[in-house]
Length: 197
Image 1 (tube, rainbow, N blue to C red):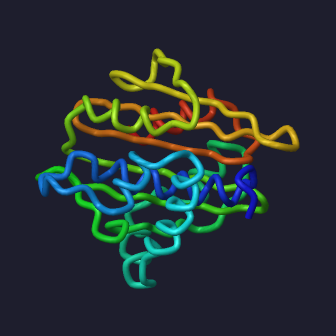
Image 2: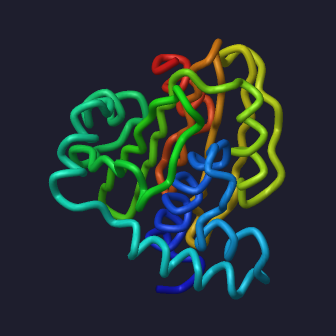
């Protein structure tokens, strides 16, 4: 897989999403994947992300359980103007922990040549938005009118496609969506985030 392919970006986004979910962990010990991604050079981080993505694939039982709490494919598809598969939940992400009292799920939706990842976290400190936006592949922009606070990014890909994302909080709920190689606009992603908050 080339570093610019939509599948690679989706895998990297999934790894980042699982790792970011663990940023507030009370264990005090970062996972090996977190350490590799935060201390390695970009080339090493790319390899670590690909390896961690493979290692973090949940068992079918974990995927089924988490997927039950994910938004439906119809909801996501209608909001973004695409057709996606039923969600695969990434439960726990290979042992990543949320802060005490927080609960969450990462939901992966695939389509023909595209991917959408949605993370839903409840009972989390709103300042956690900073941990998500520092993992964006490019600088973020502040967004008004989405939740209490929101940040977005847009990164061009080969073939006129893009990798876009929005993270927002409302009270102690955080929603993050990354859409890779979809025709959806940031406005559509922002509207879906608002719907899920």
